[in-house]
Amino acid sequence: MLTSDTLSATLAALADPTRRAILARLAEGEATVNELARPFAISLPAVSRHLKVLQGAGLISRGREAQWRPCRLEAGALRDVDDWLGRYRRFWSGSFDKMDAYIAELKDKEKRQ
Amino acid sequence: MITDVADDELLITRTFDAPAALLFQLWSRPEHMKRWMGPASFTCPAAEIDFRPGGAYRGMIQSAEHGENRFSGVYREIVPDRKIVFTFAWDNEGPSAGRQTLVTITFEERNGKTVQTFHQKPFLTIQSRDGHVSGWTSAFDKLATYAATLAAEEHSR
Image (tube, rainbow over all chains, first blue to last red; front, side, top):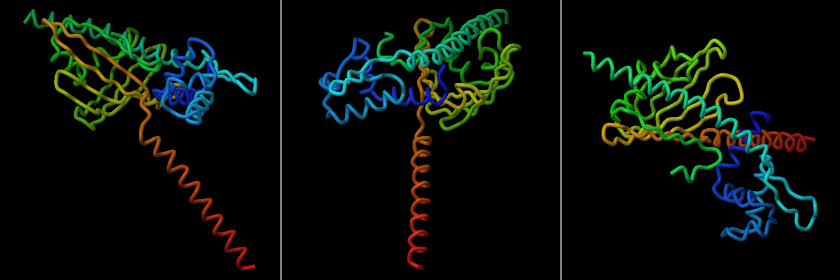
């Protein structure tokens, strides 16, 4: 389990559509900066800045080979986001079950009046 | 229909056997909210709602196992019987504490039943972004003051 601040960094990193698209591409496999930049109308330095944010948030790692440094998706950080969302999903789903029961109760009361 | 939801967003679509006007009330009136807020093992003994755009709400759910959990937020948008947008955060300590999220709920009535679409996503407030800016600004201010002091000291020698 990562700390709360790491989750903040991860959520902030995910808040950008370009970075989400980069992650979606990396979900298919490793890629170099050049490969990642190709579908976007942005410069290589701009892509590099996005990669730094993703790396800082633990969402990707980069290879050591100096020239290529392929980027790789790191599942751990996303799993933390997933856990966080999972807690909310259980919270709301449970609440909506109760909402359902409460609606039935209200209708029943109405019928009896 | 559950496309275009990012990894950090939650989408729950559910059909209730009730008109949209009733569902809208279940969300907007505290006496109703207390009856359903929180999962099965929880009760919701406290709810205060200032139901208007910019108005705040707060509440508390509790269970024997998890104790008291307080939540609060601010209404951002209200369209009667159709849509409610509000911020939501847990006020307790823990990994989710103070982490703002944005909830958008829409109601669509069809033949007396209502499809409720619930969407929740992280909400990185302008306030916190500006907080960072002012944090940096004040650091720079200090730096400037320090630099000026050094310069003055240098000068007086």
